[in-house]
Length: 200
Ligand code: ATP
Ligand code: MG
Image 1 (cartoon, protein in one colour):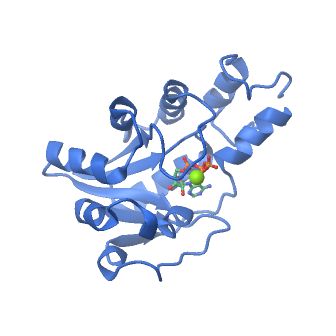
Image 2 (image 1 turned 135 degrees about the vertical axis):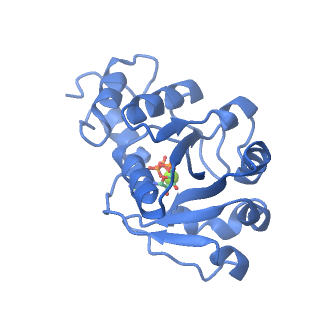
Image 3 (image 1 turned 180 degrees about the vertical axis):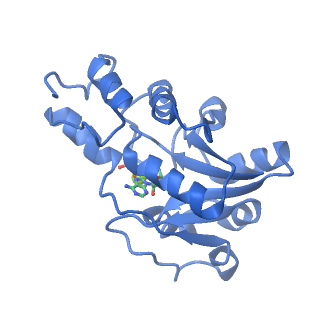
């Protein structure tokens, strides 16, 4: 089994995440892609939506794609979510799977700063998907890590969760930037402060 791991905060999930996962699945012949919301991501400001809400929106978003699954391993573990810990657990649990960690170029450029990156690179390959505004730069990477990266071309979608949260705050529509059922959830959800009335 070739498994793609789509890690992220998904705060909230948007179509950029889905296209990245689908493009990597097809390009690398992945059997499944597992979407894995982090609990507390390293190097990131606090989340907007709760872990439960983020996971729920991921479930809504992947609903119709049979090759996509959610994985709540980091949410259940709690604390800061280090991919090296997570992949160690997954490799121990699924010793016959080969893992492909899907990352946008913004994150690839950040790999040298990831916690225990050399260990992580022994546990998984990386699928680098092009992200609008971030040119791939592997210059800071150890050669051992760099050779574990597969490059995947994807249609450039200049969308981020930050942009969606801003729109929700301002009452500007995020329709079509997120799947319809996520859009409906965001509109219905009164659980969160970023939900503004009248975001039609
Ligand atoms: P935020 O603005 O809150 O950081 P984000 O849109 O960057 O949110 P993340 O959850 O941080 O989303 O990203 C998860 C993964 O998806 C990362 O590897 C990121 O590079 C990738 N990704 C996110 N948006 C896109 C996009 N539009 N195109 C390609 N990859 C993307
Ligand atoms: Mg991000």
